[in-house]
Length: 105
Image (cartoon, rainbow, N blue to C red; front, top):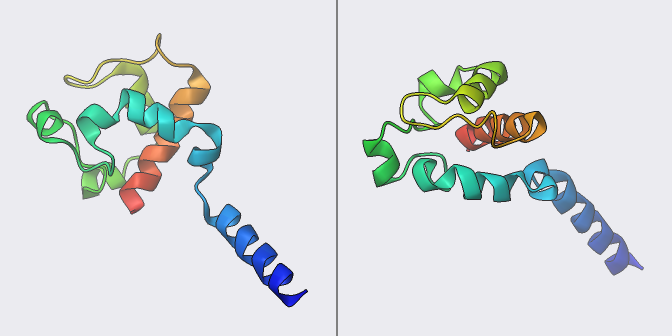
């Protein structure tokens, strides 16, 4: 009985701590649309950095609001393409939240 309770508790903790992005597919969307330039950790790939992709951990990106990130994803910025016609508003909002979370890690 005790082992079952411990297993349930551990499972609940893992599910609580798992990022919502994994549950809703935002991580997969990030991999498909953003990771090529921004990298898996948001620090940028060599190719992305050459094109001006920003490190999500940098102070200037960390201070951006979710609305500002949504705007950048929607309209594009510098060499980053606009996603207004490629993604839904919900997907863009989810990606903005994902970017904010990546910057915190």
